[in-house]
Length: 225
Image 1 (tube, rainbow, N blue to C red):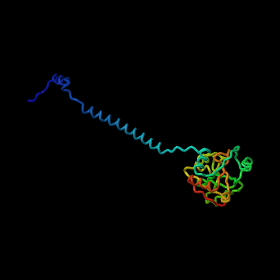
Image 2: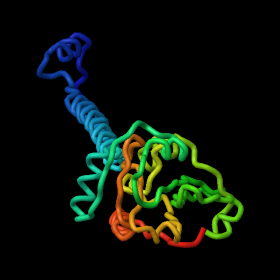
Image 3: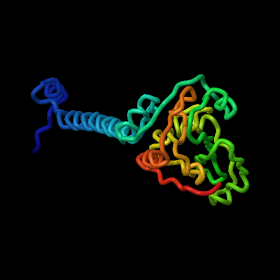
Image 4: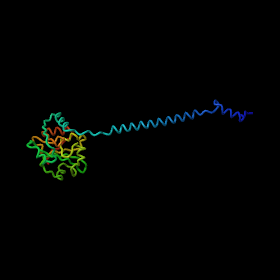
């Protein structure tokens, strides 16, 4: 005959701490689950920070445009003979003629252009050369051409309107611009261009100009315009 505990006996058993059922296993599982969740959130946070760091590394900070002084230093480092004169700021060929006096050499104009396919061009020619844009596009094998906007000029060549010059190729580190040089212009003994500012003019030889442009990573095309 089995032992049947009375109601009072069951009550005593349940009230005795040593005899109560223990739930440590359940509590441990809950603790492990909580720790795992916290660790998971921590891992996700770490991954998110790592991803942000990778994105930050990939974002390139554009370099500051070179100053006229830095340009002249670069020309000296290339052992190119130049001469620079300062004058009031000029914005047109006519203003340039009025201020330059008897400055020798070929005087030039520089056209910053963009074709309909998005290609950028810098066409450098003698100041009195008449340029027909329709004829020019056929000569250089481009899509229809128009003048590049001022904000694009500053973004790519780092100069404002009125200061366009082949010397600004020093700022085209991504080589977005194709360079075309007037063949007749390249026959002059000396050439004159703004040194990144329209308040000065720098003289350089055609050979020196080619050396500078190639050192900037561009391969200019010389042709009749």
